[in-house]
Image (cartoon, rainbow, N blue to C red; front, side, top):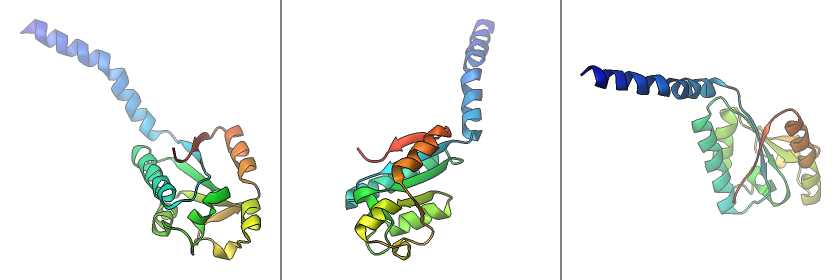
Length: 142
């Protein structure tokens, strides 16, 4: 019986750093810049799903979603297929930002955006600045 107890104690001893590190990771502050460039309905749904998955795994994550190019409809209240999902994520602290360059080309105004969505002068410049500040980068979609 003693050899079995020693073996169990040894296994628990070996596993303790893994178990402790998992607890530490959950309490770390993760910052993620999420680039979205595609705006088809399936792309919009996929982005909302990916964001929810991140928040489920890392509930303390600070997330900024940059929408530009053909992804602008994701944050336009008249065109978004997932406005309820965007609004829900905004309420959970996710920042959605629309590129002002893209908005100018699309002739969209700030009033066209879902309430709570912010704008940035340049999507790519915003991504560069966030990465220089240590934010993790994710390109949404496939």
